[in-house]
Amino acid sequence: MSPSTNRFIIAAAGGAFGAFLVYGVIQLYEHRIASLDQQMAVAANRINRQLPMRIDQSTELVAVGGLAGTLQYNYRLVAISASDADTGALLGILRPKVRNQACTAPELRKTFIDKGITVRFTYADKELHRLFSIDVSSRDCALSAAPNKRLKLAARVGY
Image 1: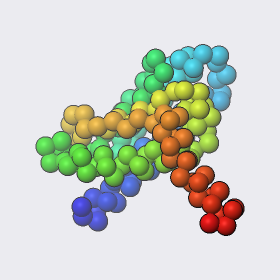
Image 2 (image 1 turned 120 degrees about the vertical axis):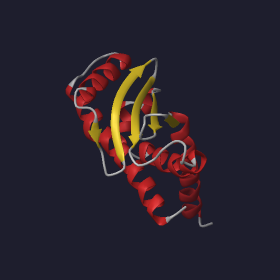
Image 3 (image 1 turned 30 degrees about the horizontal axis):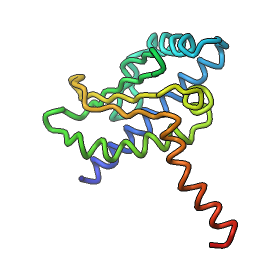
Image 4 (image 1 turned 90 degrees about the vertical axis):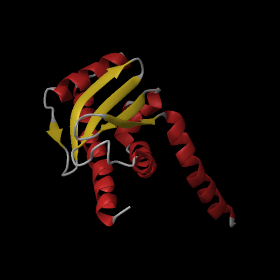
């Protein structure tokens, strides 16, 4: 992939995740609601009132929804057409970046992921044709943390 494509992908991942943190978590802390489904509905409704929203030069947040244990953020990649995109390559690059960002964000982990909610980041092309989704669950975060824990343990015991 070209350097400009790599910059686009990094910007898209960062922008998408940044939008969640800025709007979703703050809104949830303002509304202490007992049910997770109710929390997701409140967050989605408040965010959707401000959409569509340009996140960065490459990404636009177009809708948020929550139902049955999944909170979904729908993004449009404004410079990509489905007919021209290598979706396998894009997904291969974005998936680990998005999952890492989601799993290392304390607010996102505490509010949703650690409570069993799957956070789904769905990407569409500039014409809103679906490209792919990236799901982040507590299992994903546990798997991503396991290598780090093993490395820390090995360092403590002198390996």
